[in-house]
Length: 114
Length: 114
Image (cartoon, rainbow over all chains, first blue to last red; front, side, top):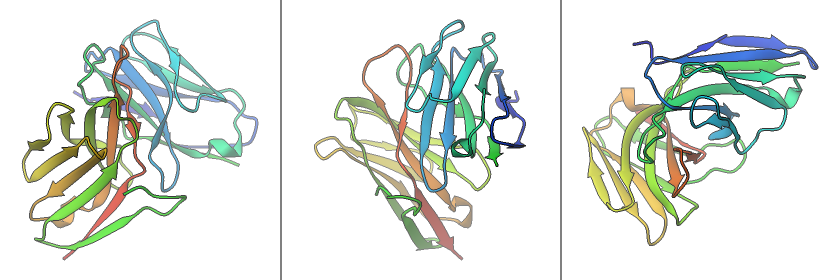
């Protein structure tokens, strides 16, 4: 099993450009998450999807949109990138049916907005 | 402990010593806690978890202690090895909700000196 995969690994954008970060998991998990991690800080939740067909805002949703394409895939879109969105983005998945479950993380996408 | 701004608290230990990493969590209603390890350039990796109805849990070379009275969590690593060098995050899951939403601390950098 590949676990959680993310593409691309690195990306440089200019201010105002748009892009979509892709995430897929092969663990048959119900829940998927997008986080951002800024230097010297913990992970902050952007959006999550408790199950296929549902999405909800997390702590820092402004400037982002998400799509839960199917049970495996959860994408994050930046419609008009800003320098403040320079960060490392992590996708995670977990079995959200029960409360007591870890989340499994992908390797991250390092995004720089100039 | 918790960090402010860009500076992670750092714990420097000698190889073979025991390490204790501390975390103060914020929500007295949280009922599930996880420790993650993040190596440079990688996504967070699960180490150990504990539910709020426990005050101690042991894994391989690691022990997590939970003190709900003062909202404090600690991770003890026995016989610390160079491969343990990483940033360690605690995360809490506030009680309730249909999905496993985690709130992450800002992390502690563990530096193991050979």
